[in-house]
Image (cartoon, rainbow, N blue to C red; front, top):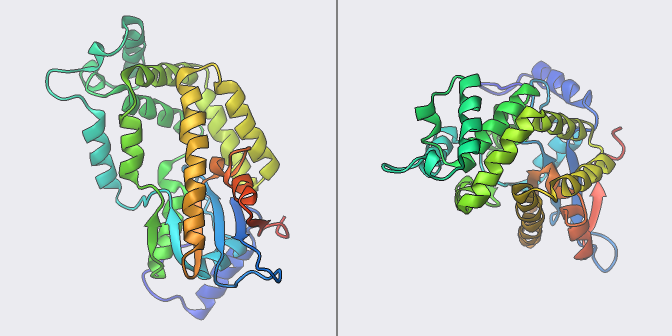
Length: 310
């Protein structure tokens, strides 16, 4: 959807709607309701559950007609974290992710892992002094983002930025499900051994292009809104990460455990007056612990709003 500095003319509105109508299934969009006793759900007591992609490509804007209609019917937009203030996010990440005076990366890693870190830095134009200031968790995320970049995926083109821009332009309030500060503290608070494992696994996956391939697979699943493929992707993650220290933590804590917390937040939104557009990373929708099955277990009706837009 193009950015504009003022109201659209009638011709411009027609052109924008035509572009939106040309987009089929994209992302995952479900309507969540608790059926009333007579079988009819209240028209203003719905949750529009949307599965986002945190990194995107040019041309992967999330907008299609079902999504725009759901946003327009919503009284609030709930995001995992509001991505708008990138400068503040970077400042906090660096504050939490760099060692203070008298400490550095070498004091926390084995000599073998440190040698691999230096090799990565040399290949990517980072000096040893720069690398040794970073804590393992932040460096691991830098490694993974670099690999996602190889897949052509950019965090500046993730779904959340488009959704928040739409909401602000239409004065729809944005509420945070977790918040960037909480997410960063979750990573920064990991024990040293788990941070080292995260960095070790990230570097190994760069060598094998694992993150590049996983990034492409997730993006393709999101772009085609293939729910069966979403379930398969989550199942593959559980299988492939089971033997890794950080990988196991990632699926059990950063995915499954957060799924349950997000389901609680979704229920709280359903108790509020008016509809809520509830957007979380697509991986949180699928699998046995995902929001689709968890909300169904709690008695809610979950309907795919794109079923007729194939």
